[in-house]
Length: 116
Image 1 (cartoon, rainbow, N blue to C red):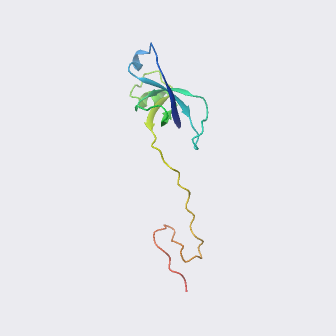
Image 2 (spheres, one colour):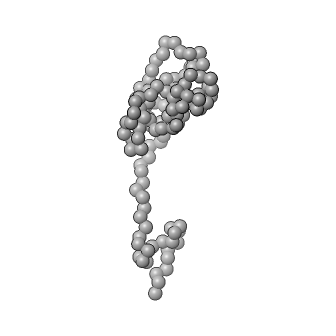
């Protein structure tokens, strides 16, 4: 499963499993579609160089997370595999009523001619 999350911190480990040597560990807070925290904070291995406050893609399945990191045998439950660029949601566009002469065809590419 892939979820949106926000990086909220980092973890320093004095000892790591050998397959994770050199891997960066971050704390990621899962988010819902509106960007509101949803669920418990996850410990994740960072594959993309994410930083605090960034919105990221978080893989939450052990086998998929390890494969995404290029470490298929590593004991990983969560991995950060992408950084999400900031974006503004766009409101859905409502077409004019069908009897309005400004109405467009079903592909919204050409204007209809008003009927006489």
